[in-house]
Length: 146
Image 1: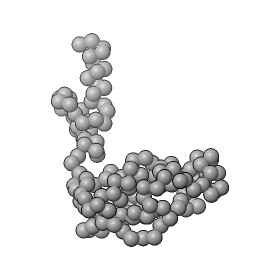
Image 2: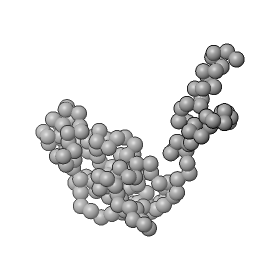
Image 3: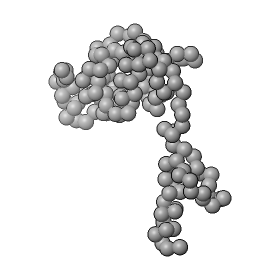
Image 4: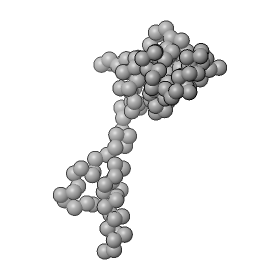
């Protein structure tokens, strides 16, 4: 077996992607055969609109401009999908970033229902430090994105 074949075999065993049919050695198999969290079938549910006053609709450019640097693009995309599904009464798979959205108060999860804010507040002062300096200055200067 050449060095390239060995490194290719080991490379496929050491990353976090789902297995592709390679059978590793018996002692090596366990930690490398775990699937990444997005590879599992996630349960579906129908989110419900949570009527809480806010400053901006979920689809407003302000949400993308100022909340993406704080929460990340995946969490904001999940928020937009949840808000749209709640408004239309449609089901969707459980979002990967649901816990992050619950932590900042955009989602509330109970045993039987997931409530989603469709009106998003302005970025609070305690979270503004996560923004890049240029975006902080823009927001502090009254950065209202239209």
